[in-house]
Length: 308
Image (cartoon, rainbow, N blue to C red):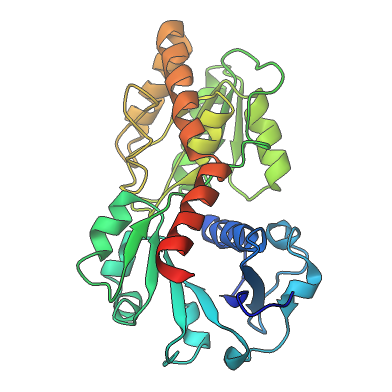
């Protein structure tokens, strides 16, 4: 790519294992790749194990740089603690900073990075409200996008089948799984990461989806993916999921970590078809507001207003 109006932008990642945060940064890289005004590249730290991970398979190999040479770039995209690997002073070059957790306002290292000048993208309104008093520069909200080409309504669902996603709370997930199995309920347990296509395939066939978030999240993508596949979702409050997890409307919300309330929510959906259908319908409608196209549109508007 050449031309004086095209800006080279460098993304930086320290990749150890797949997370929703890495997926979000990947999505913004691909949005940048599809903007004719930008020429994006990505640098992985030397200890990163990214080559075989599916998160990065859609990034052209020629866009992955082996050496970190900040002076070669016009713009920078930084997330989390990746500030560690970049210069402390960017001069007059603009920095886009992805903020994906409310802990950025409280954890000392992350809180300190908010003092650095940057244009910040928060992945939920709750994250924005947590960090806005402390940021040096502009902050906006651009929610995580759901890939509706992958997570959608496809094929038939087995009535009253249940999928438990329990990676972030495996002890509770196992307890719920064992209790439901004792009741001869059709239930599957997932506590490890799966390739995205395989996870989507499970959601396509699942009637009720129980996802267990961390107690506090900047956002929690699985409930939106379940809603997009027209599952009846059960998900407790995690702060960053409040804009789309609406108790009694788009999902049921037992208290965090409460075994009895989680079990009761499942039983309600198993025995109340009208409620289950209401949750499925409203959840699916909500998920359609969070498609990748909408995230891309908001990102380009952000670039127009502040960056380019």
